[in-house]
Structures are given as structure tokens and as C-alpha cells.
Image (tube, rainbow, N blue to C red):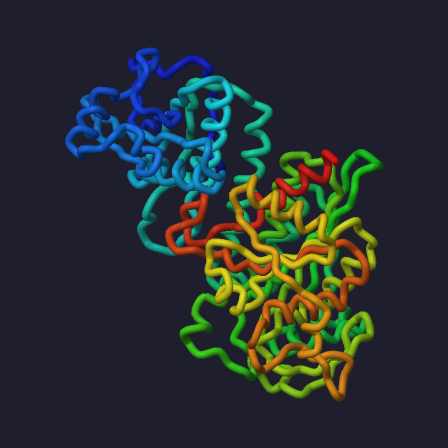
Length: 487
């Protein structure tokens, strides 16, 4: 549940009994006399004590207790810097207040009309997305969720509707991803999705393992058959707009609730945290929720490949040859390359519905993390214009992406002597690119983006989000959808 927002176009009144105050300013060398900001004298003394120039708080947010006991944080936003930097700056300022677990924060924005609009959006989103407490299983909660936000200096109810929806989608993605694997099994995950679909009015359909086996979805079944019980499924959610002219986008998400690596068992160091391997499906679900709550005029097909990759007598193994739903035969090279297997058949199902575009999200390869670290996510696309739109969405959302090549000659590494294609290569070289070339076999000519979520987790947070689990992809997709609907 996000904090309630109250908007007030008038400036902050110092007579208000506020316990936690955020002051957002444009980058200035000194404060104009027309600004009567909370804690101005305290701020001046604090800067003098630290021997800091006022403009320095565009780089380092600072806070202090005021004479009345309130905690106040001051921050300057440099609008010449990228959106990511602006988000990071405002988030760190908000976190100075949230550390005390307040029930309410007061936000005061200053500047010209355009500046105040931007500052308000940045601050409100940061407060929403960081103010809601993620699920933990400690006997004593570390902090409570923020209940109320009061904004001074700007009022724009329409714009905040989209931000609220995006924050809810991001929080859903993070909240699901953080759940321990004994709680979020394929069965319980499917139950949660069904309840959500009912609440949001989405059409809901499941393809369980027996159904997929009869359909010939051998790639998905190969991974799912190693689990007991066989509770895996491909879940299909369908959201339709009122307008007949709306375009349809298919979202596909990898939902491996726990990944042991299968017979090619991961060492403990790399198996720890593998409950987060369902993050791609959580991001797809978060995007669907955000688009629904914001009433974005676009049809969405959401396909979630939900399973676990376990080791068992029935688990698939190296040298197996399986047949995917589209008829392609695949030689199994490594059982820990299960993500591309479950996505293969799921992409085929998505493509058969003839959407205008397909976007898949997956924590797919370690080599993408090696290539980029965890500050960016990498994408691949079969359409140059779409790839450019994706990069632009990354810049405007603050969720930065990098486009990687996937030229056809990379596929030489996937040539098999006994099947149509190898699942991967044991060399490990450019595995993120080989994975994209593999997935491309199940797309045909539909415009497509594959996002390898190397930025799904970043220590200390990323951009506007302060938790290690970032929910990366939700904000990016909303910006991309806005561009698609406006073109």
C-alpha cells in the first residue's frame, strides 16, 4: 500500500507541525531572498561547520534536526544531469528521513513552475517507491511503511496518477522477488497471480505441465519435469483496452522460483540468491499492473514461465535432445541454461497470438552481469528502430540499458551435429549473445526486445530505488509504452 498523497500549491508554512521535512531546491550558488525555506538558518550553520558551498548539496544531501525537533533534509537537483543522477540524488535525500521510519513526511519544492513540477515528480516517486516496506520475516520489523506524504509548492493530480501506478508496479516486482523460495513456489506463485488477475479484471489461463506435454512444449517440460510436485505452468494474462485501435504488446517473463542448476549443480556461492531467478516474471507482472492502474491505452498479453530447476532422477540432462513447441530440436549442453529453455516455448505461445511487439524479461546469463555489472541491463532486438526507442526509454526513465549485437554469425557456436540447434556452448564466451540468438529462433519476424536483467539487484539501490532488489524494467517499460501510444 502506497502512502496517501496530499497536495498543496502554497509554500510550506513553518507553523505546520512536521516531524520529517524534505526541501528540494534548484542548483543555486546562494538562496534568493524570495525563498523562505524550512530550517534555513540551521542549513547555513551546517554548511559553515562543514565548510561546504550551498551548491554542494546537489551532490551530497544533508540533514539536521531543527530547533523544534523536526528532522529536515535539503537537496538541490541539477537538471543538467541525466535523469538517473537526479533520481539518485533525491532518493538519498528521502532515505535520510525514512531511516527514522516516519508515518508522514512533508515535501517542499522551490524554483520556477517547470522546476517545481520536475522536483515534485522526483520526490513523490522516491517517497512512494522507498516508503513502502518490503516483506521481511524478522520477529521485529525494522521499519513501518510510510503512510502519508504532504506536498507543498506544486499541485498536479493527473501526473501523479502515472507515478503512483509505476510505483505500485515496481513494488509488486520487488515484493515478489524478495520472497523466500519455500514461500514462493510455482504453486503458490500461480495462486497469487490468479488472485491478482481477479482483482484487476485480467483474463487468466494456465498451461500446466500435463497440458504442455500434450501440446509438445518439450523445452519447458524438460526443465519442469525435474521438480516434485510438477507444479510448473505457463500462465497467460490478458488485458484489453476499450479502444479497438489499441496496439497489443506481449510481455514474457522468466519465472524460475529456484534454480539449483539441475544436474550441473551450482556451487553454494552461486546458488545462494537463486530464489530471485523469477525476477523477469515479477517485472512483467509489475508492468502489467502499472499499465492497468495508469489506464495506458495498450493491449497487453502477459506470459509467465513459472517453474523450478531441480536435480532429480527425472531431471533433464546433458546430451538429451528435446523438441520445442515450434518443432525445433534442441541438444542439451548445460542444465543450468534452463532460462532460455522455458522462455523458448513461452515465446512461441506469445508469438502465435500475433502481437505488434514482444518484450521478454529474464535474469538469464552471468555473462551479461560480467559485461555490464549491475548498474545497467542489456537488451537485444531484431529491429533497429525499436532498439533506439528502448535506449531513449532508458534515458528518460532512469533505468539505463545497453544494446548488444546478435549478428547471425554468432550462431555458429550453436551448431549441433545431432539436432537443429544447441542450447548453449560450454565455452561460456559471449553466452548472453548466444542466448539471444537461441531465443531468436522462437520469434519469427515479430518486433522483439530481449532484456537480460543484470540490474535486477544492486547493492544499496539504483536510481530512484533504495533497496538491493531494484524492480528494474517496470519504469523503463512504462516510458516505452508511452512512446508507442503517442506515435
